[in-house]
Image 1 (cartoon, rainbow, N blue to C red):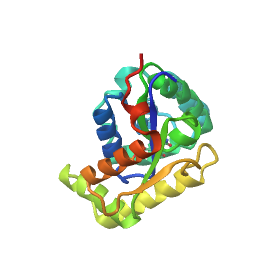
Image 2: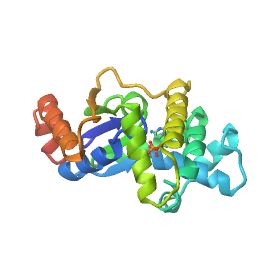
Image 3: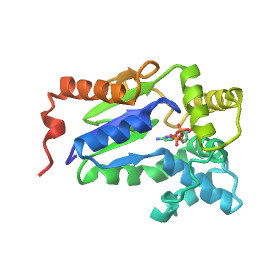
Length: 218
Ligand code: CDP
C-alpha cells in the first residue's frame, strides 16, 4: 500500500459521505464514494431493461462500467436506492467491482466510504471508521435532503425505506454491513459535520500518531 487508506463504513444517511469527503480534503487524499458504483450498475441495468436481482446480467453490467457511468447526475435519485441495494447483494457484482476499488487507492492511498471497505475491500486499511447514528436521526437527515431537493416525500416513507435497505445490507451473505473488528465507531446522532470531522481527526491522531496520515507517500 503506497499511501494511507482510510475506510469509512456505515449504514445509510449516518453522515459517512460528508465525513469521508471532509477527511479526504483535510488529509489531501483522493476520495471515492463506493455507493456510486452500485448505483451506476443499477442504472445501467435499468436502462438496458435488465433485472437488478439477476446475478449474471448485473455482474456483466458491473464489468462494463465506464468512468462516464459514474459521472451521471441521476445516480443519487431516490428511485435508484432500492435497485442499488439489490445489485449490491449479489456476490458476482461485488467481485466485479473489487479491482476498481483496490486500484483507486493503489497509487496515493485514499479515503473510501461504503459498507465493506474495512471488512472486505481493504482489511489492511490504515484506519477504519464505522459511522452510525440512530435510525430516527438518519431518517430525519435523509428526509430533509429530499425535501431540500424538492422531492415530495413523507418522513415515514423515508424511515421505512432506510429500514428496508439497512436490513438487506446487514442480512446479505455477500459482504454484509458490519463494523470490522478493529474499526472505531463514531456515533453522529448528536454531532454536526465539523464535530464529526474533529472526532475522526482525533481518532486518527491517537491511533496513528498523526505521522502515517500526514506524511505524503514518496
Ligand atoms: O447514501 P446511501 O447510504 O443511501 O446509499 P449509498 O451509500 O450510495 O449506497 C447505495 C447502496 O449500495 C446501499 O444501500 C448498499 O446496499 C450498497 N453499497 C454496498 O453494498 N457497498 C458499498 N461499499 C457501498 C454501497
